[in-house]
Length: 185
Image (cartoon, rainbow, N blue to C red; front, side):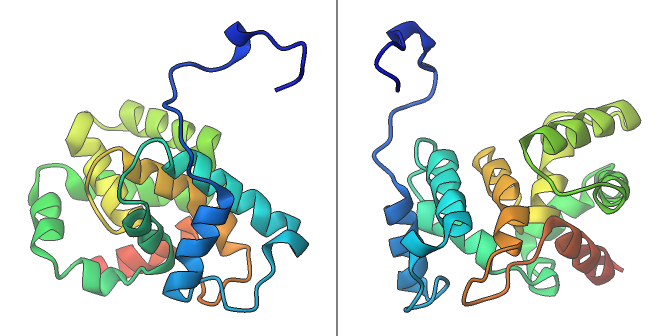
């Protein structure tokens, strides 16, 4: 905050968090995703992504490690074997939502906050589905889990992570969509 910024300009609807980029890096190192020799301070793109991950995941989740795991581990064939996944896909309209999502993901650019909003609005216009009928298939296909809204934050981190050199390859939203659709058939 600059010295002349007033308290009113600070966003007050976001809970305070002491979760930092260093905390994200520590979790990634613990799981072997960052790599033991990675120097965060020497890589501005990595530091930017870690900071963004801390901002998105910190105030909203108590299971930050579990959410980060969804970024670094994604196997559509394994996801589709789970009962929870089958329950989501068995609902009316789930496959239509997946089809619309695939078209939008594959026709567009990287998924950031603005692009994700565009995708959701386009899907609302193209399908009669709302709420869980819309969001659970989206979350399942892109994050690998159909849970709550915190998964949307995971989705926002995927394409940025896919461009970085982690110890494991991170699949982009496009790669995940292709893999999910291939495993679905």
